[in-house]
Every structure is written in C-alpha cells, then in structure tokens.
Image (cartoon, rainbow, N blue to C red; front, side, top):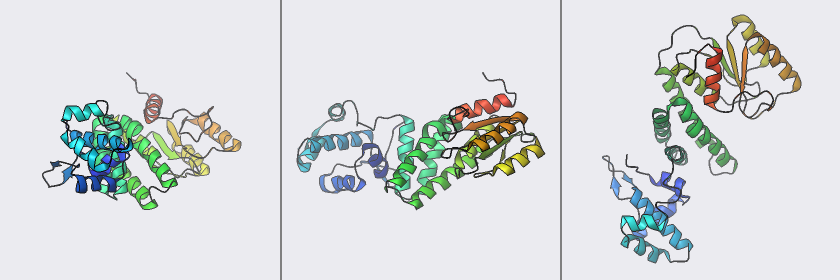
Length: 293
C-alpha cells in the first residue's frame, strides 16, 4: 500500500514544523506532488525523502535555496540513499505512522482525521494490539504535549472524544450473548475511562459482555455492586494514583469474593496484574473460563 501524508502528519514524523514545510513548497518547490480524488495534496515517499534530505543539507550549512535545487535534481533512488535508505523517522512501522497521524489530526483540530486513523489502526491490528501499540502510546504522547504546551485542552479533549467513539463503535461490531459476568471500572481517584472502554470492546470481540461502571468509581459502590451481583471477575484500572494501605486491604477482601484484576501503572508492583490490554484480556478470559490457544 502506498503511503500518502498530509503536511501535519509529515511534520509529526520528521520533526519539521508545518509552516516550514509549507514555506519550502511555496518558495522552493519542494513539497507534495500527489493529489487525491478530492483535490487534496499529499506527500509521497519520494516527496518525503526530498524533504528529509533538504532538512539534512540545511542542518549541515547548505543554504535553503541551494539545498532545494540539489534535492530536486536527485533521482528517487539517490534521494532515498542520501538519507540512509529512506526519510529518517518516516520509514517507520505502521503503528508509529498511525500515532503520528492521530497527533497531526489533533494539532489541526481535525476530529475526522483522528477517528479515521484510530479506526484504521483497529481494523489493521485488532483492538488489543491497536490499543497497546497505537492508541495507548498516542494518549501518553498527547498528555506529554499538553503538559509542555504543544497541545491545548481542546485538542486533548477532541482526541479523547474521538477515540471513545472509535472504541464504542468497535464494540458494537460484535454480537455478544448472555449476561455480563465481568465488571470494568477505574479506581476511585482515577479519571481515565478509555482503558476500560478498550477492554470492554476487546472482550466483546471474544464474545463476552461486560458491565462498565466508568471512571472514579468509589470503593464503597464497588463493594456494594460486587455483593449484589456476584460477578465472576472485576477489573480495576489505575494509571496515576496509588491507593492507601487501607484501600488495598478492602480490595483484598473483594478479591476473596471474586477474581480481582488490577491493571495500569498506578497500582503497587506487588498487586498489579497487567500493564497491557493484551495481558488484561487474557486474564479476564481465563477468569471467565476461556481456553486460550
């Protein structure tokens, strides 16, 4: 499959500011050469190699105008060879490309692009690998870019909303029969919801219904729910908050009644059971009696 990149996606992958890319196109003629059926311009791999080569030449002290003339005179093979067989940071894995595409959509406030990239990742890799290698790393990077000011709150919320829609839609693609036997929630002080939504979607893909109780679930409410419904398994996510010893003891008591699984980096090392979605799915499936291949 031939890859095509928007200016935002190429900017994210090569680390060259989008305004700089637009200037190189306008002033020097080094830019995208492919047009979509809708008339939108996209960078091909050869275009991207030229951009990467031009960037290296400029960094080495060559004036921009001269660098542009050099790369335009190179054949595709020559320009690829000039950057070691391909645009550095561009001939990346499909997962890295998907992450960069989502981030580019966030910077451009293009919700449709964010959702399309996430949907493509799930379609290509499945829910578990799609989360572990694309969506999860994207959320980490979005958080980092929000903290250092590269992304605003609106962009962060846009990404979260579109990823939530993607995961909900993925779950609806599967027919699940029977009552839910597993409870999914985030820990009492954890506001992150997407990991448990992803787990619910992945379980649906394996034929299991689940009860999602959302983020920031009070421990009292969890205890009451478990006592009333007697589920086969409970999965709690925590990414940022380590509970107090008294809370861990209450969780231990819950674990005596049902299979209690704790996922995420917020739990102490001695009690956490999974860090990845794939691990979490396998553990829940075992608790529900599935035979894993």
